[in-house]
Image (cartoon, rainbow, N blue to C red; front, side, top):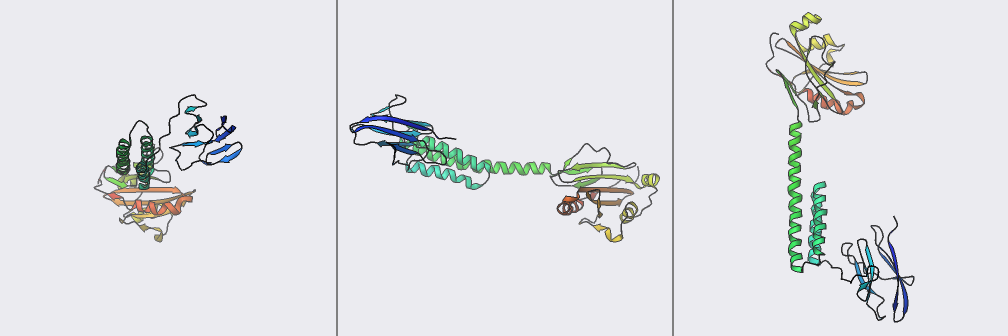
Amino acid sequence: MERLYKSWTVATADGDHVVEFYERTAFKPAKLLIDGSPAALDLTRSAYEGIDQPILRGGGHDIRIVSKKGFTDLAYDGVYLDSGNAYEPLPKMSKANWVFVMISLCAALLGGLIPVFCAIGGAAAGSAVALNKNLDNKKKTVLGVVLMVATWALAIVLSLLFTKGVKKVEQNMDKAFKKDEYSITLTRDFKEDNDTEGFADDGFDLIFAAGSETAYAYAEKITVRRAKLAYGWDFSSAEDCLYGLYYIEPSDIKTASNGVKYIELEENGYSHVISLVLKNDTYYLTEIYCLTEDAEKMIPKMVEWTGTIEIADAPTAE
């Protein structure tokens, strides 16, 4: 994007002069040329304050270059050449107001987007107040202090509220699945899924299905009586059930932190952590699985989730 350029030809006691001016941009400082040669600019003023300085002194006329935020004009004896309006000096921020603005900007150090936005907004508001030509210095100072304090207070309060809100949301999203007498606690990464078609085998009752972007879990139960009628099962322990359901070795059966027996399997591009509990004449089967490519990261988590399974009072009959 090409920066704004303006030029004027002005008459002075020592002849006509061509004044050329390039506005400052985010990456380039302003540039002033007089008769084709670079001229000194007072760049000590900020972008908020703009440029307002005399040029071509000694030529019998009061000539000033004025530029601020898209406005650039040459004031010739108190009148702008382009607009024809009367010249008014650009206000300059006091040192005190500069301090207030800088302290407001430091609110960004609290970290996070909310403090950053508060800091930028507070600094902008403080600068606007400091450059308001309708306010005297005393009012500018008082308002500068108020805005500085308000910036920090707002950044702190909103950050605390946001953090508290996030924690509350996370707590609400922490999903404890409690259906009938069976419960399993997963993390907030999981959400309950109503689309459970195909998860329950014949004879099994689906307790829950839950999913996240990286893993899926479901659990089902079947009474000993129904299992014997449907499958001919006559297992007396969780280990027997796992041996009967899967082709495994005794060393393949592991124990989670809560004492639940489980195995790890890999099949068709998926890695599974499968646990089975036999309690009060009911089999409880839980399966958590993920893509095998994510297994290294996910299996420790899936084992941890398996360790949260709790079996309460199970029915002794259908």
